[in-house]
Length: 71
Image (cartoon, rainbow, N blue to C red; front, side, top):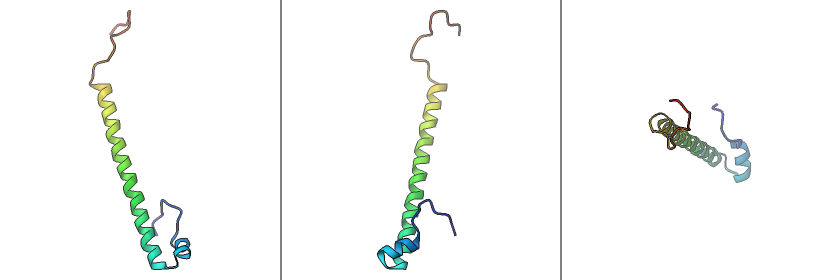
């Protein structure tokens, strides 16, 4: 059995809605939504990190160096 990212089990959901088959499908659907959402967040944040690193490495500084600062 694959560990779940959510603390909702088929048994608890089946006791709420009354149908074990529907509960299994719903748990599977919710788990997939959580996984897809996490992947989207990871990809978007990775793009943001790449953009920030690019700005740090490639772009020139916005302010001139301080007096006495040797480059």
